[in-house]
Length: 554
Image (cartoon, rainbow, N blue to C red; front, side, top):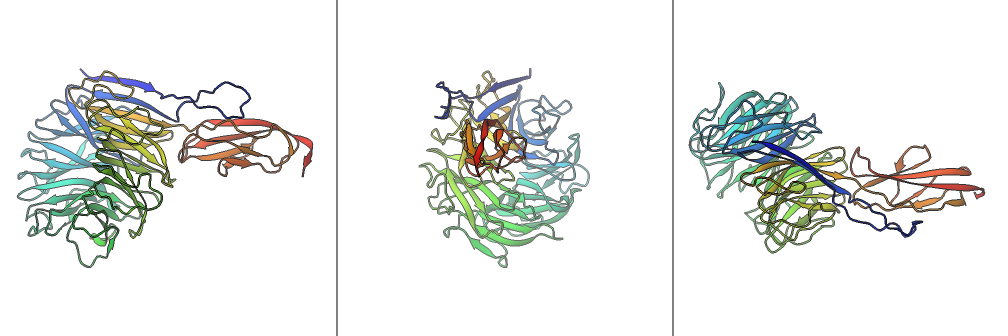
């Protein structure tokens, strides 16, 4: 029996009103961050592994399914072992528009999902199923050991367009997918097969793979790169100019590609490989080496609209190259998450920070807005991580989901745990007009705003963190002869932009936490201040009436 629960909570605290308030009472102001959530669970166990948001604002979930049918897929059925599910949640909604189950009788694990501008969804993952469903013309139709799979679906209906396996004679793994220029499908992975497309002799324990398919599912290009160690490419993202960046551990690449070192020399460091995406065949343009003396696996990469690359991962290194004003300058005793902002040229780290507490943290999703603010989500085993404007008081136990927002200047805007007493993870984010949607998985019996989850299998949580910055009482003169009076105010959330308005005039940016009017005529006027937490958002407005008396200063 399936059940869907909705609950809403607004974590409330009291803030002291301005010292200049006209009444002695304290004003009760809600916290600027509020959380609502809905849970989806059934007799099966289902956990989100990746998400992607399409041009229409809909979010597509890649889900691992175990134990039983996916309740919200009315036509598909569970095949055994573990299956992959793709589900669509339209913009502004929390329910599934459609869901499609894909798999064979072995183990099928979906790893990545992407959406193309052509209105199609692509998933990739790995399978041991010898009967994994493929379509006519597939590159490979029967798995040998472990092979990667790629499936393209219609974004409107969830119908499968085509399905293929990718691999060779031994172990082949695909970890991530992106849709680049000309709707070509880029796949990042690793192989031990000497007959992997574009490959040859395996130098070390395994080599990294980058494979490009046409929109029709045929092979466009493939290359195997690596050196004497176990190499892989684990994450992939498309830049605003159409270039494609892959991240992973690679110890051998094309020697003609320029290399930039952004950290101490160490063979066990992440590499960022930038490929020309618009060319007939991908060309490796640049290699950027990052990291410190320990292992620094990258977990999530994303591009900002201005072309800057955002990279989040987990590290034990104490010597990561940071820049700007880090929120946290050193990792905890068991490591920490890290966030790096790399210039579009790939030659400079423009900002970076550690983030976390005494336990390990695993970032899983990263998004940014047009103002340069960055949201990071994932899972944390630290019980003493940073909390600011949190909707959950402390960690519940085990692995806990988390969401954190950094302003464009690197300041911490908010940070909160999201979870219960068991294993929880926030696996995807989607920005909207009031805040950020979160897509999470939990095996806990409780989750913020939801108290009676079954706990016998992983449930899917679709939640929303609303950002509503509050402007304090506007301070300034009630009566003045000054025709250009100045007013002050405060905002309870960092990273906001404030706008001011006089009477029915246009809204214009305030300077800092103050506002000086243009020259006004004698009489009654109103000044208004509002705070915006992101592009296109508005929040609470504060206003003050005042009068300019005759005989005003010139």
